[in-house]
Structures are given as structure tokens and as C-alpha cells.
Image (cartoon, rainbow, N blue to C red; front, top):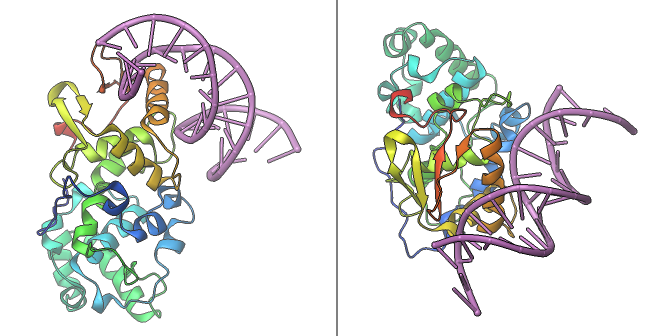
Length: 256
DNA sequence: GGTGTGTTTCCTGATT
DNA sequence: GAATCAGGAAACACAC
């Protein structure tokens, strides 16, 4: 299942990569955070669930499922196309109706947030300074979908979330309408893709890693290391073209 | 502190 | 000639 924001904004091709990423992306969406310290740092803001946007509701949903090791495909996300106020008005029965057995977990989580001085409230992006609003932020942040997160660990990586370069690439590919013109599928069924704006992708990757000196040269070196691990396969004779290998997970349509 | 992993950086040489 | 590819080597950050 793929989370779909109702109002997504495509990044104009003319916008520089520096402007494509909101300040808070690197601040809050550092994927190194996704392990032990993730929740405590990410959920450390003071916004009450009542005030959440739809995006923040989804973010909470995602984090809660992650926290309980629940596969996101087990609940219909469209039932949570709500803002914080609507969410807080849901009864226990509403939750179980919307999410089945997971509903009780979600209800408990939300109740805790509402009554425990909301120590774990979702990141509010209230400091957002770019021209992207929260739904637009979803463009990039949502590329780490719960389903792919939970279903795509690498053989050598115990971290189930999208922390690695190949996952970063994959997630851009899985959201073409939200990250247009950067990378595109050449052969979707075979996992063949091509960089359209190699330096832009490198800068995006660098932004994510807080490394302003990242270049395609360096990124491609990291990509080449994936050949040995069979996460990527060589595509001979074609520039900027790569192919997912047998150890890459979560890119196939059947896995969505 | 040691180790393993996943890059990152720099490099040389080949190819397009 | 510039961009890209390929891969060796060392360094680095981080988790365990």
C-alpha cells in the first residue's frame, strides 16, 4: 500500500535542489534517527493531536505501527484521511472499525498522547520556513512508506527502514509524481532505472546525510559497491542506468 | 575500545 | 575535453 496525499505538489524542474528540501527535512527526517532515538527526537514537539494536520495524523500512524512492528498493509490508510480534530473525536469503536484489531493499539496510543501531556506528539513542522506546507512535505517524507519500510530490509541490514542509499533511490522511484525528473524507470518490471538529474539526486542524498559536498561521482561509487552485494546489477554500456538486483527489496509493484 | 557495516573521499585509468 | 564508469584504497561515522 502506498500512502497518497490528496494534495501533492510536484517539484518544479527549475527549482534548485537546495530549495527542494525544506529545512525541517534534514532536521527531522534524518534517517539515522529511525532506530533507537528516532521516536524520542521526532516526537518531542508540543503540538496537541487536536491540532495535527492530515499529514501528521499519517505520520503518527506510521510511527505507531512501526513502534509495534505492525505491517502497515494490515490497515486501510484511507480510513485515516483525517485531521487531528477528527481523529481525536473518534471513539474506540471507530478505531476498531477503521483499523480492525490494530484499532485498539491506535486508540490507546492516541489516548496516551492526549492525556499524558502529549510527550510523543508528532512533529509539527511549525518552524517550517520553506514554501512547502506540510502536505507538500509529504512529497519527500512519505517516500518512506510503512509498507516498504517493513518489507524491505537488506540481508545485511537489521534496520528495516529506508536508511540506505539504494532505498533512498528506490523511494524516489516509487514516488515519481512527487519527485519528478530526478530518476525514472527504464523497465519497471526488470527494475531498470535511469538518473535524469544525477547531480540533483546526489545533492538530495547529500542533503539527507547532511553532506553538502556530495556529488554524483561519490554517489555512484557507493552505488557500485552494491554490485557485489547484488543489491544492484550492472547495466553495461548505458550511462546513468542501474538495475535492482536480487537483494533489493520493495521496488516491485507486487511488493507494494 | 574493537569490530563490522555502509558509506565517503580520493584516486587512476578506461570509455562514451 | 567533459562526463561517466569502474574499482582500489583509505578514512569516516555509527551501531553493537
